[in-house]
Image 1: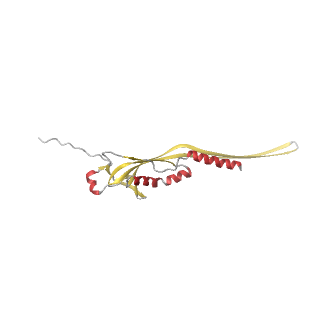
Image 2 (image 1 turned 45 degrees about the vertical axis):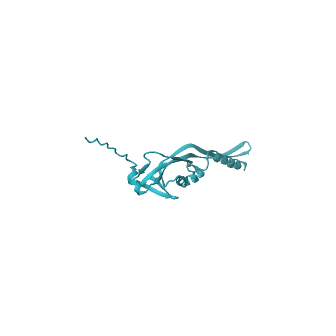
Image 3 (image 1 turned 30 degrees about the horizontal axis):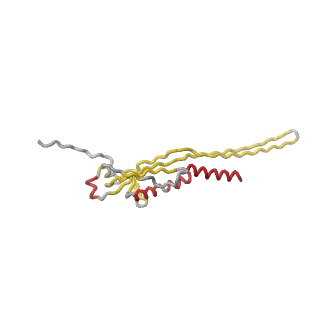
Length: 187
């Protein structure tokens, strides 16, 4: 029974040591630039808590890039699964707080930062003796498991939709740069 209590205490210490704080969306970093106003061609979109999530492509309308959200959270284990389930909700909350209407997934990578393993061994032996003869019978079992410890790194662009009347004046297509033609002075 002492072994079970020791293993439970060791597990609590280990989970506390390898699990970072409860995750919320990372810091919002404002963007300023001449190319902040853009127009996308469309793509895959879903809406979560009133914020459009563009995971493949960009909004097919004029928008202004107002900043980025960088998020890192533990992905492994039960705590990691709970944190990942709250990823989009916390991104939406941060986007709203900073004036965004939508986010565009820019990058998502998984980093393996280590492994966690455990091993259990059991064994037994029976010895019986009769006269000058001894009989030994033994058995054993080893059970081992290992799991990767992963962090998820995500980066989202936060955008504000612009009214349609501003779209024709300000928009720069996302995938093209404007062609600049310089006219020769008239003679």
